[in-house]
Image 1: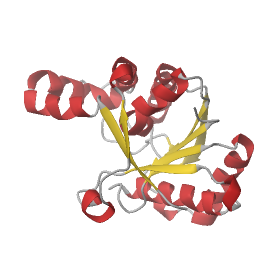
Image 2: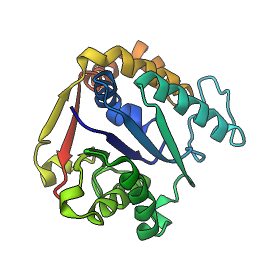
Image 3: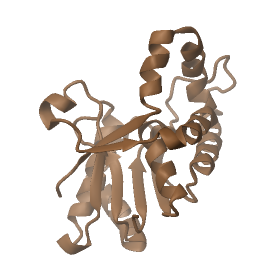
Image 4: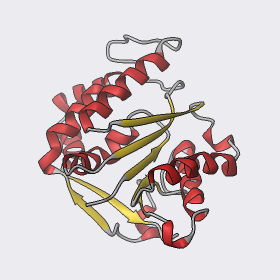
Length: 218
């Protein structure tokens, strides 16, 4: 059992799609989980199907959805970094790392979950993952948490090898699905496609059975 898990991702829904099952297993075991969410997804293109949000209302919609998803996953400590969606790569990395470091010093997590820099496709993913790892580097070696990184670029297995952390999440499948549904503006179209496209449904079902990570050696 971990002492405390710190999750650092840039967008509402990253916690659910990348790590919802893992988080649910930790909270179910009684481990406190803190989620540092970088942005409110202000520049997202999904606004429901049919639309129920617009560019002006989207940040409020996404925050409400995020809080509902966190409640479903058992996350009791959600912290918003207040960054602008799709601009995280332009933030000062040292300053951003210091903000994450401050939370790490407060929480003393034994496990940090974030994106693997360079292997997480979206610039926001790579930038915030790099800042989180930089924050870990700033700690004395004996105070650093284990770092598990999610990666999904086409070349991640070619360059990184197979993931060394494979987590069976089938026992919390329903919890992850509840969190996915909570992110309504981003998941409605996906859920509708799952209903009509068996191949797509099979692809998505795989993410409800297993989540994988690469341990980042800091």
